[in-house]
Image (cartoon, rainbow, N blue to C red):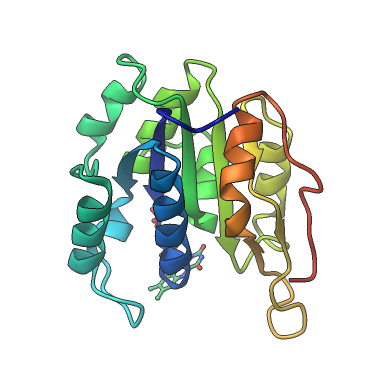
Length: 195
Ligand SMILES: Cc1cc2nc3c(=O)[nH]c(=O)nc-3n(C[C@H](O)[C@H](O)[C@H](O)COP(=O)(O)O)c2cc1C
């Protein structure tokens, strides 16, 4: 299904090393004439790191999408009642956000938007980036892989020797994952490893 004119919630969480890839994909979606609604977790809004300053990322997101990012739980709550998005993607999705989502915890704007969105039985796409995907978080990956209305950007081990528990998404497959998820299908193979 084409992304033309689709309302897409794009939520960024604190995997700062993968922000550049997320921005590339947002640009890609905009060239498809999708309407992109940005959402930021509290940590994505406030942590400055060697990968960049939080305020610069906020500004870049605003300039790119032409919209003020959703930055509070109260501003994320209407996503459900107002049926704001056709589809939502968490890109990048940290281990922290993944674990909370799998366990029904809703304490950030991203998790509030996700909860509000999936209450309407609409598709939610996860673009994973976490060093514990094959460790502490494997049970949560499994729970979400098996959950209705949740789809994954295909992912794999990015550095099996030096980071044996790490898995990250092949972010360039976001568009294909979204198009397929809008038709209720997970693109396959969902595990593409090694990178
Ligand atoms: C520089 C830096 C890079 C990080 N990269 C990742 C990452 O790639 N994946 C991850 O799961 N957590 C990463 N973290 C840790 C998360 O930011 C942290 O777990 C945070 O609580 C996530 O909150 P959020 O999921 O609400 O955004 C990183 C932290 C810092 C400071």
